Length: 75
Image 1 (tube, rainbow, N blue to C red):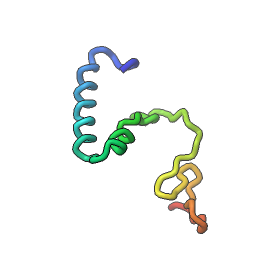
Image 2 (cartoon, rainbow, N blue to C red):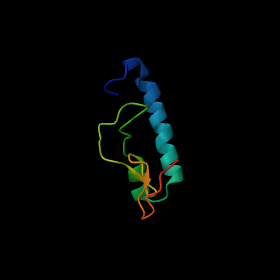
Image 3 (cartoon, rainbow, N blue to C red):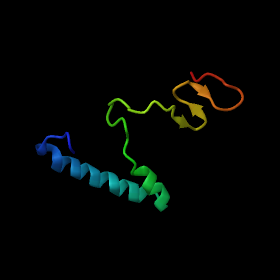
Image 4 (cartoon, rainbow, N blue to C red):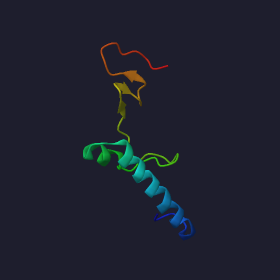
């Protein structure tokens, strides 16, 4: 909200309320809810400040490789 024009604050608050309701509905455990509420560092297409490779489901996204012994390339 710090960089958002004041005229858009109410719309953002509304969207955040909808997001929070979805988190509450979809995630049963407090730990999962806490993870779901961690801000996205990229936002809507903005650059990430992190240079650490992201790991998702055993795939090294930055390197495009599987993290298992096969080291297969991701298509």
